[in-house]
Length: 104
Image 1 (cartoon, rainbow, N blue to C red):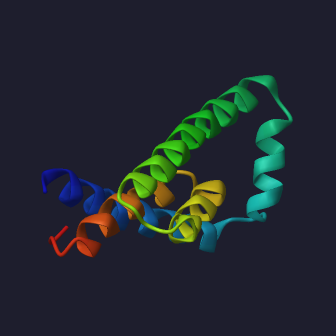
Image 2: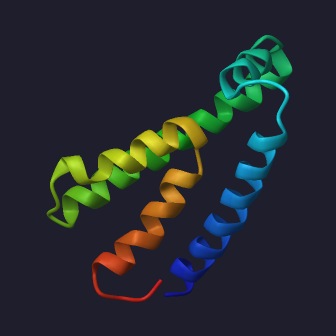
């Protein structure tokens, strides 16, 4: 239960911060990502981030399968992770507890 509370707290705070930064951004999310990939030092950070996102996605798919759920139920979390990286796994951690009848 402590993990779900931590995940919920991080999800809310990071979602608010992400929304705020997108509102004040001077360029699109895609343009920002391409700019990050244009330099080796920032590209390394982006690649590292998406490697961890890939590992988190593998874990979500495996966990979803072990719980006996349909593969399509994990798809929204994977798509969210593809765009906002950590929001997908955080939301998955929060909602899987709620789906089991436990409070986050």
